[in-house]
Image (tube, rainbow, N blue to C red):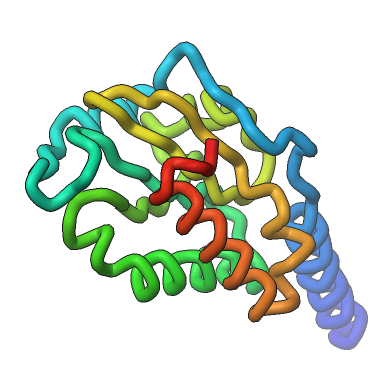
Length: 174
């Protein structure tokens, strides 16, 4: 009898992990580029409170915010999505971050007050979003929807993030 109870518990735990993994493996929407007439509240308030030094940044009062959106349920792949992107942004674009031209933000959409991001960016899974801020307002955004197909090829994933960020800094991303 003890064996049945233990194996039932293991089965339930295994199924829970399996379904979590499946939920985390859901693909991203096909839409490549989007722009919004409205601005997400958090992006606008964050951008409005950040002052850029025009002597350092070539475009006055503009910046790129790179978001990683997740929820409370995360698997090892979800952490890879975040860690690979964050490390590329913070290492390869340290100068842009230092000059106030780029910023990295990790956001849990399950936290109170962050739910609006699901609608703002049409999220339904973990996502990397590039948001362009000009004069304190979001002017456009892009969902890097290839992250799920590239996450298991670290080099290609990192190059994808790097090339998208470089294009954005050159004003060619959105």
